[in-house]
Length: 461
Image (cartoon, rainbow, N blue to C red; front, side, top):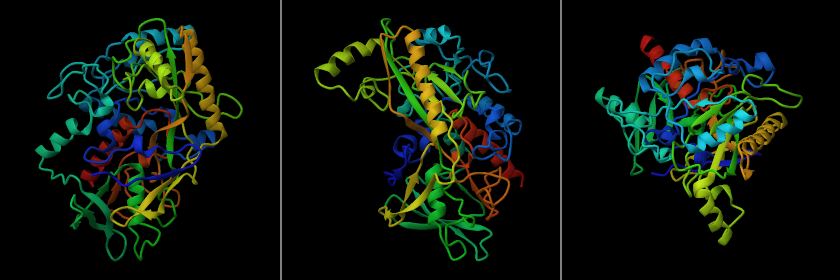
């Protein structure tokens, strides 16, 4: 089954096709397992910096859940080597090994007095339970065929089956149903793989269809009680759509970098620029560097795709050189929550006759200035590392968040801090759509921490 397309516009489109997933496991089935934590200064950006939205919780509230998740899933890293890391238990496993590409690029950071550390990765360096050890062959974005990477198919799905859960694969929920008073949901309607419509009743419903589709589902669940969409009395469903603005730096080095070795997410990270969100006039936002990701000749982040401007004999000569001497890294920056960045329903419809999602996303000048500063810094780092030539890729969107944000009241948010919809007492939402701010770190670890916190809240109430 192929999911319905998402229509996009804005000066930095969300890139739904590359950032989302469709099917059991969703986007986490092909994620890169980069699991840093949000920082303490990411939670109150409105109160502190006058930008975007505040979370209804702070880092200290979420810290125990980070610690519990990393113990259960297993993260490989070296907390002692991360001077910027917020408080928390050490990682349960030693870091993954460093390969030639990481060693070469690290010299550039050191030359500019910038510290690096192993990326915390939810990937096994040694066999653990039923999961194999990583082969470092760089196929993370293909779903990790051997199961060394902690995606839901190898971590949670076997446990769910063992606990008696029933998974209805290739089923697409089309509408959430509610009672006559509009205070409780009663179940959902869904289409099976053959396109047959079904209705299932439930005492509680959790929507975990990722950022854009959760918002689309609520907006498509219109009724007499909720004419603008379920849980949308204050026109907040779909608003405050967030991404991580990103830029890639590429280079060729005289040393052999063995760029195919390692993992897709990278070998090293640098968060030296994270603490100061307002480093100068006209700029706003933290950013981090993810360094030395394993790459293939082609593929999503492949070597050839870094140079779309050359072809024919020039591309052949470039690839022969780059196959042994290529290096890359990515700056992942912070977005600002803006009400006009949002998911709405399109006039165009999918095969089932449901309106498609339309995503509008712009970045403003302070965010653009941060991306441009990171790009200039990245070029300087590669030159300091001895790159014979280096170049930057286009600005792009990495990860999608917001759209069903959590908050303290229904006038300013869709859910409470547990993801419970303010308007419907037994409807919960999960995933990065809850984020009121993006921070500048990959969201998956935080999604897990929030989900565990919500699950235990539901069990206790």
